[in-house]
Length: 161
Image (cartoon, rainbow, N blue to C red; front, side, top):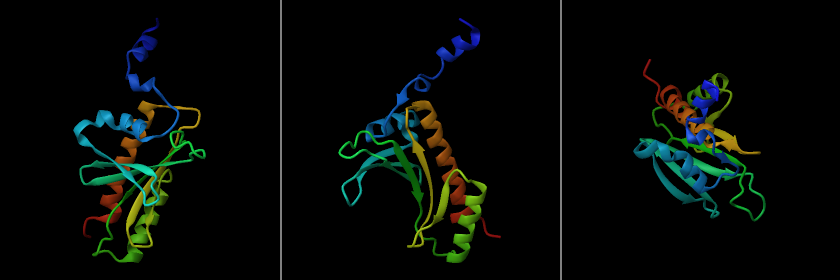
């Protein structure tokens, strides 16, 4: 075996495990290596659809299952990750919306905004069409958490100027 191939074969086992659909179980498996750094809770929307809430310290990320075939809730092909914050009382709504728009221009692979209730949010959508490695999904979640923390620092609670 070539050295590079041997090294890859010994690599992270999650880089060999395919995820073909998003469910509460597959999301828990993606999050498991975070250990105590994440608190995981199963939740339901008001309509009764399951989602997973993952808390990384003060940051809460809701993970919604989308693109599910009719009557097959365990075959969802999409995962919508959403982090949001309470409406910041000290921020002017127009300035907050402008800051979210600026953030969108810098980070085009996500969506940032302000809800109609004035809550700032950042979101990202992942797909599992044709399967994706669990390790890749974990890196996607890690990147989203870092992005959400940056959104909090730059948009929600920027340093006073």
